[in-house]
Length: 306
Image (cartoon, rainbow, N blue to C red; front, side, top):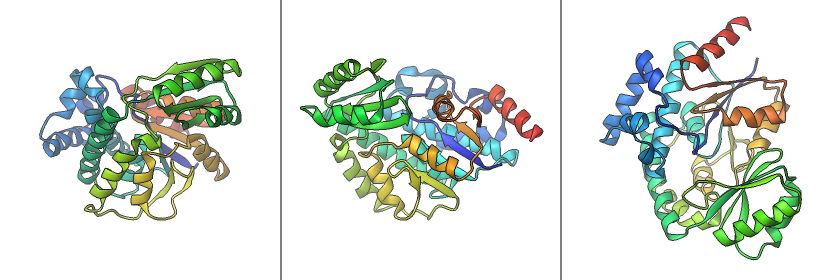
């Protein structure tokens, strides 16, 4: 059995996430309490009680990172480990943590800065993101190329689910053209900026400057990256910086893992969005998620039978 840990992306957060694990596992409680101590405010209070702040990029990124770490510690207590690690956008920081590129405190501090830089840039260059459903990537790529303003494909989530990002006027125009070209739906997303485009360049420059002062390690496990859709080869800082402006090649990472013979995919973090993407690519895989006691129990039952 070859196991993949997949870390959920920003947008899947919800109030109360992690609360059951906090109440049932000392390992998870330690992570939450440590996060509060490092940050100087209670991220768990925001996660458990404050929807408005939880959905603010300044807090979302550190909240998601905290829940990745808490779930990883719970899985470690059952000796459940990954052969491969991937994440969707922000989720890649969970994969970096699990391959020891940085420790929890360093990762949390990086995401405080990343959230701040992305939030500040979004205020200066407002834009929109939209999910395009049921349209072939080659057709959408053509529509994006023909558009008058700035737009690009930001996420290749799964076959028939792509996300475009850019200035609002152009995103709305491409939405219309996509529907005319046969897309089933074009749904504007509730995001605070045009993520994964060159419009976020200022945030990537600031992150690069910040990372110059941070010491990072080479990954100790097998790690695939959003920016290439392939295995990590070199220069981890560069990939972290480029990720802010580059497309997320999610289904390309899954295809690469299937070539490697991966059979079991475990989503770590709130909801099971990545599970649904993987199911659309290959229904025969063993696909689980871990976010609370119920989902943990299902995974443990499956592993017991293996």
